[in-house]
Every structure is written in structure tokens, then in C-alpha cells.
Length: 591
Image (cartoon, rainbow, N blue to C red; front, side, top):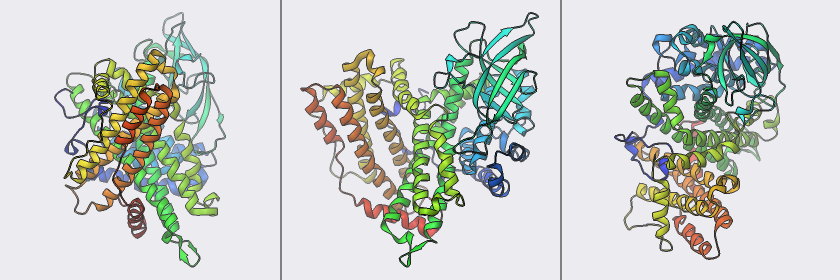
């Protein structure tokens, strides 16, 4: 990537990129828009009319819906043409994930099949395994599931007890164990199962067919949300798995699991966008229909504030999602020359582990916020099962647990970036050292005659400086014990996530100026976002500094934070009102 304008994972902390070098949703081509429309039409025709029935844990109905989507070609977007797919870009895959995200429980089942249920074979399987399974998974003839979690092994996946032993004749692995919280368990044909061979320290991965003797599927779990998704335990009792169904190499399972989780996190970041757009549309339509005190509630300032905040957080998250999606496409293209397509794809995705964790956390929390405000805008009706927002509220909560809890992912944001820097991917610590040498004379860098976007980028640059200061002093104070200071790591992670989202939004708005006429409404979004980000950065930095600074360094660092989070005076109230007014006028999300 040395000759590319694409940043390495985590490098955004020390390097800027130009707006022309990022991809934004405004650049979707006609084919991509057509694919998204096909997904949307499918939801309207096949999913929404069946939501009440599928919520009753109707496995057969969900299975039939999935198979119909496969027949339409929706499941093979990411599959290469040689295996019966369309071989679309990662950006297009993410657009499909976004659009399907509005499908409630169906979205969970669909994404589990197309992602973690199919792609481990495409990415890590040999040619024989790919030819046997991938074409059938691409059409929906086979449905897939991913079996990693166990009763005693959640976040600590490698502590699983499921075991495999080579049979006496050497033709099979004898599999014994138990998996839980398995999406699509009730009807899956193929299972990606992780187990330790003999007394191995790390996991291996296997392709197991649910028809194999000894595979026992439990009843569906009773869940808070995503009730239409089949989630059950699976038991393996002396299951004979052919040796040719070992996925990857012996002991490679843990690496496979981690790589697939990176992919799942990034795709979840896109998936929640569709759910959030659905909730925003439900919100504004209700606000435009509901009258109180003789007027529509959409005329109230407090409601406009909620609507605008929903839009801003969604739009900013969306900006980051497609920014990194294009980065993955660029890296995959660079890596695929002369190497295996599958491995190149997953290596490109895994490379952006920092951004994957950021999108997972910010996306899931954005949707939780949007879904919660949707219920509040509906008032008492929002608590009624008659309304779509009630289902959306319950369904949104799982996303903060899926693909590694947000607590784990927050720690990964910082830990992964620092490890990448130590490997030499970028000079994080050197830049931090230089910045700290300039204390206490650090200022906000304001210059006369700045343009709008120069000012916005200066704010982002200053926020990054605060992160570098905190990383430097935290590392210096805690040393190797920093890994145990999770509260401080969370403070740094919060700042990193907010900066990445704000920078992505800034670049999107700047680039959109070349594609649209009037971008004033998008500048309003950016103004509100930067105002709020400054507050979050300030609070997180002050908390962290109090944890590691000395009486000598504390005043200097606090003054630096004050200087670097100083903003101009912008009428945020009116900015939010203008955003809300556009949403209210359009009566749907059209940003």
C-alpha cells in the first residue's frame, strides 16, 4: 500500500487523506443502485408481510424466505463467478448488507448465512471444498451457520471444550461437544464448527453437515428480540466428520474465527444503517401524522431535535462505513495479483481490524440511539407491539453483543492500533513523542482566512493530537500494565472512534460539494457533529489525564485539551432544525 493513497488500518491517527481519495455513497453507480432496489423490493414483497408469523419462531417460513432470496440471486453477491456468484466489490456487498438491514429478524438470518455461514469456506477452503459447498450456499440450496460460542467460551473463544479425535481408520474426525447461540441452527445444512484436535492449544475448523449422525439441534431460544431468527444449541455426539472437511490447516481455526469476526463486524456496521433508516422513516411519518395541542408533533422543537440527531448520527456512520469499504476493495485488488482470491479477500478485510471494531461499536450504538428515539417519538404507541418501532427497538439491542461485545471491541480499537504501530505499519509513537516535545506551547493552529473545510479539518487534526498526547502519557505512566487499565483504554477508544467518524463525515461533505449543488444541509450535519465530538473528546481526555498525570503534567495537559477542543460559535439549534425540516418535508430519509 506504500504507493497508494489508501491509509493502513489505524493510520488515520497520524495521517490525513484528501476527500478525492475516499468513496462516498453519492458515488454508487446504476448497477449498485439496481441491486439495492432488488433487495428493497424483496423486503417489501416477501419479508414485511410475513413479519408477525416469522416472529412466532416459524423455522419453515424463515427457511423459505431465505431460499427465495437465494433464487433471486441476493445470496451470491460476494461469490466469484466460478462458483455461481456475481463477484461484486466489497462496497456493493456492504450496500446489500445495508439494504437488507431493514429486514428485522430476516436480516440476521440472511447475513449469518451469506457471511459467517458461507465465506469461511470461500476464504479458507480448498478447491474441492469450495466446489462442493459454495455454489449450493450461493443459491440457497444449502443454508449455513457458524458454530463458535460454547456455554463456557464466549469472548474467550479459544477456551472452548468441543473436541475432535482422528478415527482409528484415519478417515474421519470424531467430534464431541456443544455449541450455543447459533444463528440459523434450526434449518442450517452446513455448519462451520470450531474444535480442538486432541490436546491442541488452539482451535481447528471443520465443515459439518447437519445430516451427519450425532448432530442434535436443540429448540429455539426465547429471546428479547430477533425472534424470527432461529437461535439454538447444537450438540455433537460422536459425529464422524470426513478428514477432507477440515477447513484450512490443523490449528488454524482460531485465526479463521478472528478473521471472520473482523468481516462480521464491518458488515454489521453496514447492516445497522438499513435498520436505522427504517426507524427514521417510521419516526418522521408518525410525527407528521400525530397531532397534539392541535398541531402535528413534527412542528415541536423537541421532536425536531430528536429527528435531526437520528439523521446526523446515521449519516456520519454511513460515511465511515463506505470509506473503509472502498479501502478494503483497493487493498484486496493489490493483494490478489498472483494469490488466492479467497485469502486475499479475508486478508484485506482483516487488515482493517481497527476500523472494523470502530464500525461495530459506533454502528450498533447509533442504531440503539435511533431505535430508542423512534419509540420516544411515538410516545405510548411506541411501546405497543402494533408498531414497527417496538420490534426495531427490541431487535437493535443484540447488535451490541453480536460479533464480540462492544466492551471487547472498544479495547480492540486501541490495542490493535498500538500493535500495528509497534509492527512498523505507521509511526504512532514517534509522532506522539514529537507532539509531546512541543508542550506546553501547543495551540489550536488557527490561521486567518481559513476556508470552511480547512477549519473542519483543523478541528479533526487537533482532536487527533489529544489522542496522541493521551497514548504517549498513558504508555509512559502505566507501561505494560496499560493493558489492565481498561477504563483509560476506553477513554482513548472513545476518542479514536469519534475522530474516525467525524473525519469520514468531513471528507464526505467536502467531496459531495463536487457532486451536488447546495450542500448547506450537510454542512449543518458536520457543524453539529464536530460540536458534539469536541465535547466527547474533552470529557474522555480529562478522565484519562486524571488517571495517569502527575501534579506537574496535569495542568499542562488540561490546558492543551482546552486549546485543542476550542471551537467557533455555531448556532447548533438552528442547524438541527434545518436538518429536521428537510426530513419532515420529504417525509422520509432522503439524505
